[in-house]
Amino acid sequence: MNLIYKSTRGGEGVTASQAILKGLADDGGLFVPSQIPVLDVPVEELAKMTYQEVAYQVMKLYLTDFTEEELKSCIDKAYDSKFDAEEIAPMVYADGAYYLELFHGATIAFKDMALSILPHLMTTSARKNHVDHEIVILTATSGDTGKAAMAGFADVEGTRIIVFYPKDGVSPVQEKQMVTQKGKNTFVVGIHGNFDDAQTGVKKMFNDKELAAVLDKNGYQFSSANSINIGRLVPQIVYYVYAYAMLVHNEEIQNGEKINVVVPTGNFGNILAAYYAKNMGLPIDRLICASNENKVLYDFFSTGTYDRNRDFVLTSSPSMDILISSNLERLIYKAAGDDPKKNAELMAALSGEGKYEITSEMKEALKDFYGNYASEAETAAMIHDIYEDTGYVIDTHTAVAAAVYKKYIDATGDMKKTVIASTASPFKFARSVMTAIDEKYASMEDFELIDELSRIADVEVPKAVEEIRTASVLHTAQCDVDEMEATVKKWLNIQE
Ligand SMILES: *Cc1c(COP(=O)(O)O)cnc(C)c1O
Image 1 (tube, rainbow, N blue to C red):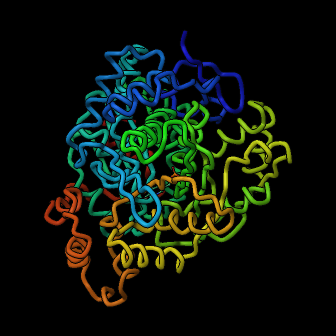
Image 2 (image 1 turned 45 degrees about the vertical axis):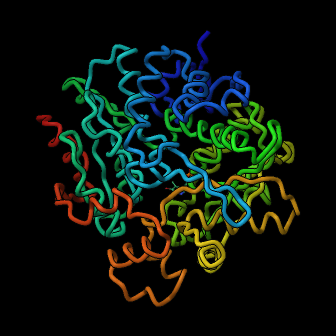
């Protein structure tokens, strides 16, 4: 029997492959499985498996309309030598916690864990549903997602990807990563506007029925690679199962022993995957949600009110600078007892007044979560202290999680073994990381800092960073905000 995916705002029932192709449901809701499947392989078996084998055991429970051959082929194409660690997601013990390193893929951030398989899931889904159009992935990015999505879709047959980024709103390393992207099917455009302008422009194109008809006539259809796609959530469940099995394998925990998980959170995709893993039967106790100074989620978990009406703070962990955590909707829907009407009301309040309040019953349903946040100073101090004490260097996002974990222990005294999701390589945020370790690094150039980081951490400079040192710029396109649609049409060779 196929697992059916429903919208969090209505009744739409589709298969997994259809949900992956559509991205968002027609009513604006997010696709959720009608029930969360139960892990049906004993942990002692999983403990003997490779990452790819665990991935198959987990993903087959969600993507039930994929054949074994299809799914295994997607997994093998995604988790190969693009990753610079054989374990794909290795674990490092430091300073009282297990750091699950999710940054060994092509763009050295955790988004590679899902975006290296999504293109294969999508082309397989297209084939299964007899889609003969070329799939055009439209993406607005504030820096990280665009690069990871392009790296995943580059030269994948039957797809094209176009990324819009704010011309003056990303870091020099992020821009260099994007404009040097190879692949005949990739296209990068800097827009004269900010990230919100890019995102609004992309959403407008998605919802434009006339544009959809023009694309259809020309043999194209749009799809989305952002984190609301169920094809990004499911691959993220895998590494929590893998981490638990690895802890059992290494005799760090007894089989069945409960662990805690700490996740540096922005759009709520990664921690939601941990929640799904727990609901599949994995012995996870608390889900610790770590925010930076944009602490909407901390306030939500402590008060039951989600309120985005506040100033947006630019922090040293930019991938968590976000005031609307899209994936939280899937949790709200669950907490509301799988009630799409109740969820839709709350989401309408969010888009209207920018806030909503949940009932005390719903709050009770969220008691597995603990939320807290770290200030910029606490984040920097964490990087400094862990390096001084252990020699291990963590990035700014991971440091937010580590600082929140300390607060959690202080508040609860709970000493269960704990996995911290390490979401980016420190090389990606070398300046913030190095100046946290020692102010004297402030005067160094970017690549000097990278070489110095390599030296003090005793870690080789990752390939992704080496490449941009010398790579040539391949994309120079720019446009105004109101030219985005024309830019897409021109690139796709569509005549007006
Ligand atoms: C995207 C990102 C996050 C936040 O993950 P969500 O799934 O959006 O909560 C944290 N750290 C890094 C490095 C990221 O790129």
